[in-house]
Length: 324
Image 1 (spheres, rainbow, N blue to C red):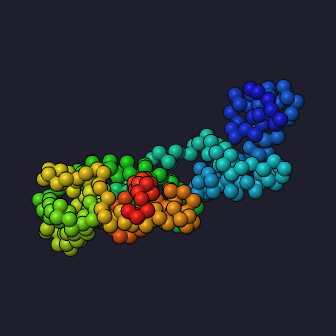
Image 2 (cartoon, rainbow, N blue to C red):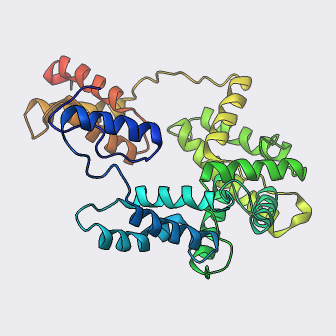
Image 3 (tube, rainbow, N blue to C red):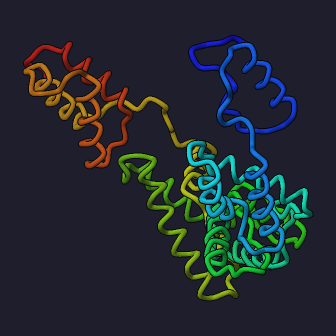
């Protein structure tokens, strides 16, 4: 361990014996006494008192106990304040030693009931995505934690990723129909209709055709929710609709060039921006004026990337002034 202006390792976050030994060796070598590495016996007694309160469910969790314990530690050592994270970690370790169960691993029966309810809502189409159901689960658990009373079992904090995994597990165990669903013939007819409109030039971009198709499919889902006999809603996302639209277009032979040629209207707009840039009307570089061009094209219904707008402005600047 290399030494610097401050003795490294003096502010330790853990009090395991190997780390204590390293801190003691470094302190002896540098001649500097560590100020926050060791916990005194009085501090340990305060930590044990709050750890037992966590085991008896008198405190909601170790973090809540650490907020109250911090004041007691400051009174014991006014000039050596402990951080909330360090205090909570030490309380949690001591609570496990006193018999506390690892509640963040075990899912409670109330959580399982809520998971099954949300999984059924995803299957019936009440939620378009599993992520929305996971957020609803987290919001409900947060609401229940606010009504927690001393003596009751603490409600653990779950991550969205953990909730998502449990929802998928519950759906698989209950044999619920959700996930990647095949496209129905009715949906395919709607998609084919918009592919025909796109090939006829009635949409300025493929993305605008997908947006219009999504609006029609959402109306079909709303009708299915009102009339359950017509089938369950599908809840297609925009990315799924655009991908399916693209696949059906390729099968039908509709041309989908990756690099679309700029239309005359787009070129006129780009030439106007190029002339303003050449006249020095306030833009610092081509990238900033390309972003402005992209915004105006987007308002008119044209879909272009910033780099494509920048390249077109460069081409317009190379043209003669009379041809812009």
